[in-house]
Length: 464
Image (cartoon, rainbow, N blue to C red; front, side):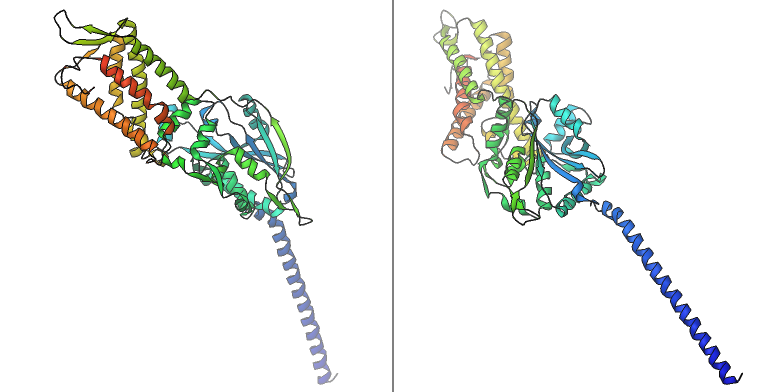
């Protein structure tokens, strides 16, 4: 074998070896790529779950749960929640943003609410248990299926999973702008790419105060109290979007919305199947508090006016004093009535003044009703309690008389100024019902108290 032949054989063997080496490298690369692809596909569900997505959105059914108003004070706006039925996972969960915790007792809870530091949170639990709670409260419940596309369901689920994270559970509650219903409103609008916001009417045609009065008609004392202590912020007209803080408004707006049908591209209602889960009577509205107070207080004042009589202080006296027939009973009646009205006035005044300085609720600041309801009216309530227990007028001393004269005069001027500003349209705040029904009661009772409740008050320098 010649040298040239040997060299050709070695070259052929080298090429064959190189070919085998390249084939092995190719197979290794293909195998590695396949393994990487399989690993990526295997990890996809895990990544999707971490991002809040779902393997098969067609297995998700989403419902809006709307709960009617209840008997408790905090139930009078109603309630909203989301129900997520996952057939793939076999779960049926209610998402509820209306949960608050009374950690240190009712006094601490009331204080936290007053200063606007009360936190609400998202809570999740099984649907059956949630519905049982509303059944025990005898509140009607409506369920409406929300027809979302696969992408919209993924977007909503991602937001809900984000909200369930421990650092996102709690939120600063606001009864008009951030509550259990506005959370659902905002999340659905996000899932629908802003289409929900665009579909809502520009204006609602009513004010926040209108809605507060309407929803608290079943607990008139609370309705009246809110009417007094909440300021002019409530008297602007709501936008349509803002009005969706009310659960029934949110349900009605979503029911009227049309969305694209995925297959045909036509329009279909956003709501699919609709169902009444529970049905009970809505709490009945009570008689108008303003009218009731006006009627009974003026009737009692009229009775006390009819019981007035002139009494001589002594046989030689040249001045007579106005007193009561059956003074024991009627002084106690005057004392009870005055203590109630002026006590309530003082409490409202204290709340309004205190909230202006210490509360984070801006709806309680700069209240025009402070012109009428004074914290110092609590002093008048204490004087009235003296009439109730002793059944006799309070004898003014040389030191106390000027204070009472100026106080009554200032109160009289405040009542006149309040009524003038109300009916003259100078207040941005709606105070007409208070001016019509409450100021006459305070005025008549104040004049009656001045003329009967104080001895020696009209000797000299009397203003009335």
